[in-house]
Amino acid sequence: MIPLPSQPEGVSWPTDEWPTGDGPAALAPLLDAMFDLDGNLTRAYAVAVVHKGRLVAERYADVIEHFGGPDETIGPETPLLSWSMAKSMLHALVGMLVAEGRLEVPAPADVPLWRGDDDPRRDITLDHLLAMRDGLDFVEDYVDAGRSDVIEMLFGKGKDDVARFAANRPLEATPGERFNYSSGTTNVISSMVARLVGSGGPYEELLQSRLFDAIGMRSARATFDAAGTFIASSFVYCTAQDFARFGTLYLRNGVWDGQRLLPEGWVDDGRRLQSIDESTGNGYGAHWWVDPDDVDGFGTFWANGYEGQSIMIVPGLDLVVVRLGKTEAARSPLLRQWRRDVRSVFSDS
Image (tube, rainbow, N blue to C red; front, side):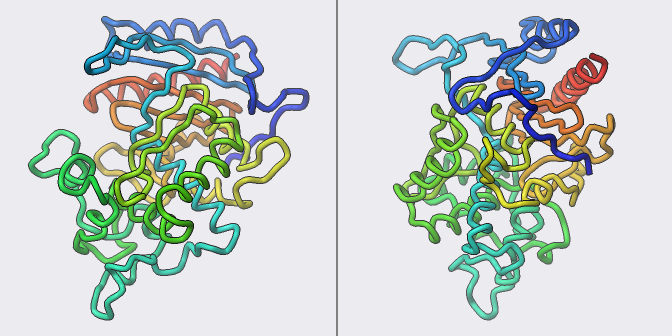
């Protein structure tokens, strides 16, 4: 596993503002391609690139349409939607609770609906949930609402208590036996955190103070359902620079400005390859996506979200790349190639 680099000597931590620098000249054409309205990657809202602790490039475009109000021009101060990148943020919070001995990864998941002696779901562990190997029957489909559990959970009958909706799903496979990417699984974990720390306000305060504020993500706001559960599958809003701060926390092995925020080894557990998503060929660790073949030898892993949101972390190049926008799933291979091209630019510089 490629080692995680430390903050370079003399480069300040971006808790308040990003130190800046210059990126390689060859990066500019890739940014042009990302924001080309006639190209294959549109629509792009924001890109932020951090190399060796310095913000070396950022670009913004397009507008957010507000119902009944004026459109909002996207810029450095615009909070944008994470979609499933929020899953990786929950991974960080779980790690903090594990470090305190309040959660145990190998232990059976504390889910009230699964406590019956004859309920096979009682064998599901937190480890299974983090790795998306819990065995629950859950369909992650954002196109076909007629067969989609995630749409029903987020926008239908499950929206007021997303975790209960997900926890009610039956077991389809033996826990640990198969990989099935599921937003429901993340919300089940989030409900475990809520029961532990207090739903609603206490949970939000913990997330804000222990994670967002601790690394300077001052724009970050998480969305909670009516039951007081952080909808960690899908809904955090923050700026591109703040998403880059979160990526930097993981690039720096869970350490921020001399303080360890995540337990030793937690980042490695997240980026350790455990599964392959047969539909895309991407690897998966624990609430983080992983380059299964490490194509370039840089140890790339990333947080991923619907319509092409990503925080790419490249330990071998000391690089974080945030991309936010709206690209249909059929074009995701083009986004993957764009990220590889960005890596190549920095490896050649």
